[in-house]
Length: 247
Image (tube, rainbow, N blue to C red):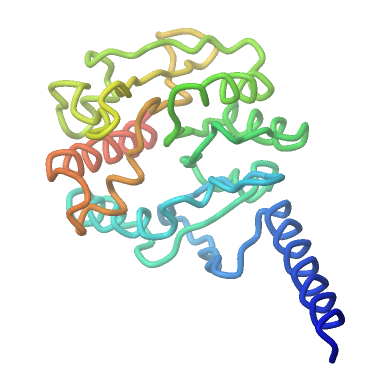
C-alpha cells in the first residue's frame, strides 16, 4: 500500500471510530456499563443517565462510589441494599418509578429533552427524591436552566444546618467541611427544592453545589482527599438516603 493510501486508510478508520464514539455518547451508553439489578423490592442505588453531544459526566465515579456507599449503608443502618449491583436509568424510563432515590452527577452539562424533563417531573411528583452532585461555579447557570425545564415554578432555596436532612441519621454539626481542599474559593453550598415550594412539605431535591460528594466517596480508600472529607461525604450521603426513605 502506498503512503498516500495508507494515510487515507488511517484517516478513514479514525473517522469511523470518532463517529462511533460520538454516537455512543449521544446514546449515553458505554461498553463498561454493568447490568441493572433485577427489581426485588430491596434498596438499589439509581444513577440517572442523560444525553450528551460532546461530553459525558453522568457516569463520573461510577460504579465505585455506589459500591462504597452501599457498603457503609449496609453496615450502619437496617437497610439491606444491593451491594454489587446498581442501576443506571434514563429519566423517562418507566422503571424509574420503582425506586425512591436517584443520583444526578455533573448537571453543569445536563440539558434534558422534553421527554426526560417530563419523566423526571412525574417521578418527583410521585415521591421521588433527587440528589444533585458534582458541579461548580459557572456550571450553575446551565443546571438552573435545565432544572427549570423539569420544574418551571421551582424555588431553589439555600438550606442551613437546622434542616432535618442534616440530622436524619448523623447529626452534622457544620456544613463547611466539604469545601474543596485545592480550589478554596469553591465553598460548598447546599440547596433544595420543596414539594409545591412549601418548606412545610418534603424536600424533593438536594443540591450539592461547589461540591463533589461522589468523588470523595469513590476515592475514600485511596488517600486522595483528607480523611475528614471522605468521612463527611459518607455522613451526608447516608443522611440523604435516610431522609428520602422516611419522608
